[in-house]
Length: 118
Image 1 (cartoon, rainbow, N blue to C red):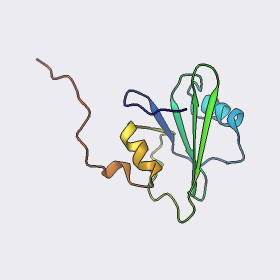
Image 2: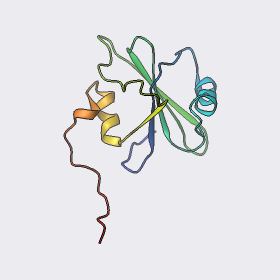
Image 3: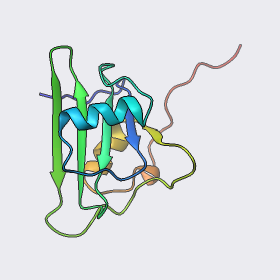
Image 4: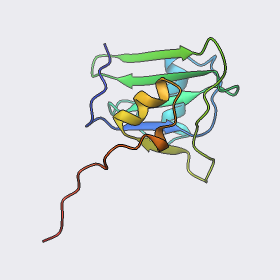
C-alpha cells in the first residue's frame, strides 16, 4: 500500500502523458524525459491530455506501484503552467488536494517549517 507522508518527495510532470503507457513506459519517461531516477522512491504524478485522469508511479524498494484515478465527471481543474519546467514539486497535503480535484496552490495551510538564521 502507498502511504503518503510529509517527508516524501512528490514530483508532478507538467506535460500530459499517453496513458497507454504502463509501469515500464512511465519509468522510462522519468529517466529520459524528466531526468529523474524512477528507483528513487519519489512519487511521480502524470495526467492524460483530456485532464480526466492521473497516474501515480512509485518504487518501494521491491517493485513499482502504479495508481490510476479517472474522474467519472468533469476534469482536473488545476495543473501547473508550462513555464519551461518539466517537473513541479508538491507537498503531501497538495497531492491529497489534487487527488480530490482541488487546487493545491490555494490550500491556505501554514508554510513548511524552515530554520531561522541566528
